[in-house]
Image (tube, rainbow, N blue to C red; front, top):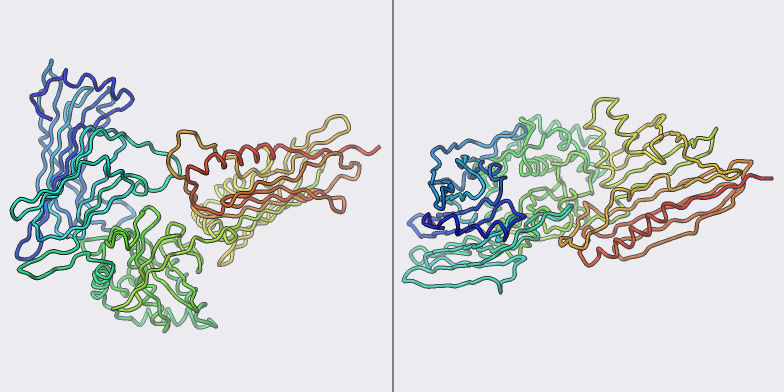
Length: 624
């Protein structure tokens, strides 16, 4: 936008975007790519003009731009165009502060933040920002996410490059028919240009996938370039990506200290199989090496030396993968370095063979064709269970310096992630009195183990357990509980009582055996929801209640058995009478990690039915 424009030129924005705090007038990214004697010179310049539509303008006055070891700030300028009659008065930002981003949980992140404050920001103002970055690693070429939380009037993405740089361009979640795309050759240069107008804002929705899984993106990457007729590969296929990853590993010093060897020998001395040895070493790393985002310079991609990780007792995901591989090597067991992306990323190796696919590193152990994905960043995951956030993702497993394989991490079956609660209840002086056994497996196990170990105070732990095991109504009392934990499951024995849960009417008693209602927190999907709903994992919930019919009563009414079946989610409630007892069985299975919009209406139908079924009570009649 030009400073010569008047305030009246923007008066229509109040109506056009009346429910939006800000509007991006112009967003432009221009990337210059030049070939020099030593390689590529890449500069990225970003332009940002924002109009502030209401009184909340001041909330957006603070701004920061992040850089790193590979992406350096070259120059930055910013200003506020302040309404002054029908003209704008420009007030420039005078002070920019650059500091290292430090978190108490992070030792070195190698992120830097250049921060500043737009002056005199108020309704009707416009801010202008321009900054240029030097990108000294061509593998981190800029890409453009073309939609934001606020609307965009004009967006432009330009690559002005030496023609000897070979690009590939990918599109994700985008309608290319709405893009004005052009390629222009000018002498020794090629200019790629994308222009889009009137881009609506996106809406955040609960439990949706990471934003890169649904926002539109233009993703160019450099395959190769020529220097003096010599072809230099960058990301020219999956093999080149592996070659780069593998090169980073070549810098590791595999020195094994006496303490490392002694520790391994102690851990495995009583193990009867390689699997037991792997479990023992994996658990030791989980318990003794603290996970930190310990990234500094090339350390963001090069694991540190295993003996240093062992001595310091902390490391990031790459370091933890490295120490696992090294300790298993001492035990004469082969494990493999493995690169992988979390579920926050939508990319696959064949469609975009770049480091964008990966943001995580683990180790892999293979036994008789079974793959064990060892991610010690989560200290509560048992051997055989991958971290929940890498389920369904492609893993690049380094078999040796020249070979790798791409393997998809399975989504763990619902039956493995089971929540099984069994209670026996009676009526004693008007109260429901019960004994229960809750068994947790899979991700339910790891979640409970993490929570129980995090809560140190005994009173706080009792409050949590009361909430976790609560049944019936708000008069539920947890009398006592005992937690028994193994390497792969948790059993919780507990006793409880519930006052005023049984309802009496003349000579009849009413009791609802749906003591737990695990769907109480789920909400119906609204008609305007657009994004997928993501579960952390597939699961199987099973609840059974055995109710002893009081001697002086007999059964008068028993609810019908019900079920709801869909390939993605199923539940049933069954009642049976046996030996003067009523046995209630409930099961709910989610056999998918992702509910797509076409499933929302079926889910709503199921939820409506299950909530109706929850209300059913048995009726007992006093014997005459």
